[in-house]
Length: 134
Ligand code: HEC
Image (cartoon, rainbow, N blue to C red):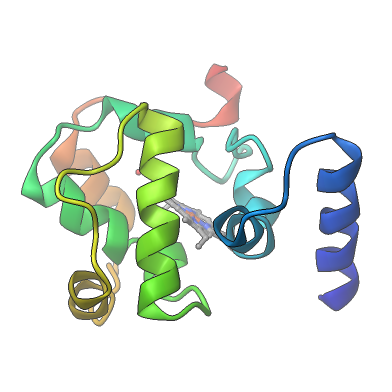
């Protein structure tokens, strides 16, 4: 696992992208292995660009933290809140209003979704997006 992570760091550096902020580093180490550096996902992992198609509701806000890959990320509540604020800004064009706080994230991540795809379908009738659609 360490080797994979290191390879990702080199990959990221080689791509010329800036890995200087802590939040990007957290994305790189904890999310990019599945969602890819550019968020495009794979056949089995949804593209993060698809979250811009979700309605701007409290249900979506809760869903995004309860998705297992988010809820169970090995990051503190503070770092996860910062990561999700950054992630939403990056993939939907605007940060959540209000921004996630450590306190909110701490509460929501206690209940990871058992069936995230069913919850996703409930929030948006559009099919979950994956890289085959881009
Ligand atoms: C082991 C692979 C894996 C890792 C690591 C992972 N995810 Fe995911 N992610 C998935 C899969 C698969 C889904 C689809 C829902 C499910 O089956 O859990 C998903 C769904 C999501 C969604 C919802 C997308 C949508 O359109 O509904 C978001 C947001 C998300 N992940 C963010 C993250 C973030 C942020 C991290 C890092 C902290 C992360 N994921 C780490 C595999 C992963």
